[in-house]
Amino acid sequence: MIPVTLAEVAAATGGRLDGGADPAALVTSVVVDSRLVEPGALFVALPGARVDGHGFAAAAVATGAAAVLAARPVDAPAVLVADPAAGLMALAAHVRGLAKATVLAVTGSSGKTTTKDLLADLLGTLGETIAPPGSFNNEIGLPLTLLRFEETTEYAALEMGARGIGHIAALCAIARPQVGLVLNVGSAHVGGYADGRAGIARAKGELAEAATDTVVLNADDPLVLAMRSRAAGRVRVVTFGLADGADLRAERVEIDRAGRASFDLLAGGERHRVALALVGGHQVSNALAAAAAASAVGMTPAAAAAALAAARPRSRWRMEVTTAPSGVVIVNDAYNANPESMRAALRALVDLGQAPADPAAPADTADLADGRRRRWTWAVLGPMAELGAVADDEHAELGRFAAALGIDRVLAVTDAARPLAAAAAAAGGHATWVGGVDEAAAALAAAGLRAGDVVLVKASRSYGLERLAQALAAAGTNRGGNR
Image (cartoon, rainbow, N blue to C red):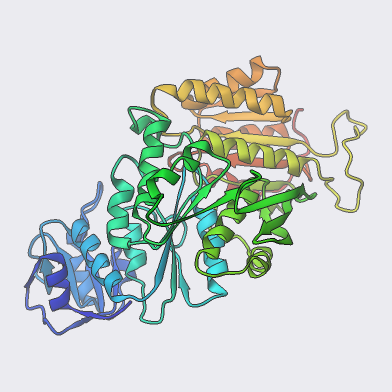
């Protein structure tokens, strides 16, 4: 972090020093978790649903914090403000103003974190780059990322989420992105918007209005491409996608036996072959988006292609593929879910299922002696949160989609996912329902997963299906189950 004094913190946040705080004391990091305090840290005492950060203030200072950003006296050096969360945002805006870095921000209904990670890999080849871990994309995570700026930071790849109108605009007010990248407009959080996807488009488009140099838009998504009008005449617009008119586009997309995509990257009159190490055909769009954003700061197509090929997964529980000791392949994509990301993950599951269990074997689906194929695909799907009144319909549609793909077994988890199982079964699929994560584990154990089978685990984060994926990844094979 660019060091600031407690006097600067007070001025930036509109606060006052208290508890013997030394105005000249330097703050060299900012944390919201007292367990992460290092000497020179500013501990932000946020109120929480279960605990209040003010209760940890004294312990934070005892372990080296320079002071506490607090809403009330805490019997320790502090900067007192009306709202510590708002103070965190204000301090991040101040440090952002001290930095010389170019900020690139990503938003969209799905693919934000993976694209942000890819973009960070590309920018890292150009200069010192910071990016948040996972999806630090809200009013707490984003300012914490900005507060990691150093004087030597050249680029920042940020992720911006929105639960409603005005959220992205507020994040942009402190981040001041030069480059804004909009991936797609889907159904994530649609329950929070009275006018559905039109409202989501309006919220995501706030980034197109805020970017000060370049707006990067998905030419394959009409709602995103329409955001051109919100940037027209003010900043440069760069497009990406499969569409013929896109500035950066992909041709000759192929999926290998491990579910990884390769494609020709076409940009600036050049053509470069890219082989991704990420699983899923949907990663082509994410890769194009990252390359398009990097091109806005001068990266050449050749350099982008090389960096994309070298990129490896950074964030956990996003198409994280593990082969268990049993030989079962687990795809842990349990960080979050919406209708679009669910469909992308199911397509990737099908691609993985088409590969032979033994890589040296031919890629066929010939029946074995016991009447089943070489490997089966299993989709263990929890609910998609925040869909509002359309939740049952969206889950049912997803069940029909899974059945149409020919996925061998669908296991829906929790009450909210019942419509998914019912619709998949009605459409001719083999689908069952269980009440929770423990029941899902028991059902899979009884079913008898075999070496080479591929199991996708996906749901919205609040349902905790990553625990199931992790347990499966550590499990042995049960060969005695029923089919």
